[in-house]
Image (cartoon, rainbow, N blue to C red):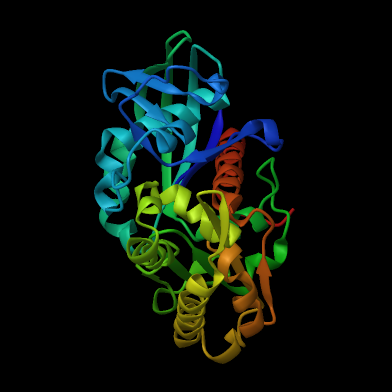
Length: 341
């Protein structure tokens, strides 16, 4: 089974095929479960049980049932039980098999990649036994793990089709760039003929969560009860441009507008520093990550060759899956080179 897994700070995404039924995404949040007195949304309550993680409520219900302040934003979160529980939920959502083998491709932010790639590989590789509460136990064996820099997902998604075949042969020799705007980080990747250019590839720590923190300061001064909500819920307000206080709509754009402009200008300025004015020598500038919903238009204004993907938050996971399919096919035919066609 080939799987692309993208454990982001805002959302966990995983892909095991070309159809929507073979994709899963949920908020990256896991906490000890608290049972509701009554709920009509039992299908959203996903509890993962395993010896390695204990018992944890994972996803949207975990966000709704926890007070603010429990979200992890450190690079070391990959070593924690919540991260592994999110991985287990993704696997169990993608397959009901009691036993299966997995060929996995996943990613890390550029700033964390060199330091943490071997650690993440050791965490995910091997046999994993777990179950979703109310279901039978599963034992899935991750036979191979390929860890890649997250921004590469856009290149891999464009290069390959869902069967792991080369679909865009131009990428074999083109110069392209990627801006991957996440919650904690923004990844800038320069690629020439499928090799990244170190001087043009960096990661910064000023992503979408900085907007959320500015809104929290506004809440603290003006709407303190709103600060009791989880970061994921506040980010939803930012994307909507509004929130409701005691049933009354409050326009949030006067608060978010200045910080969105500030970070948007910073993204463009940083990209220009790495790739030159207008990224003129790069044929395409791929824009991915959940932050593309906030800054995609600003990036398009600066780089006319920018390509902002539909569902940009899913591109890394889809690209990882296509690369996993490519690897599996190459192993099958005994070939390890990327070729057109």
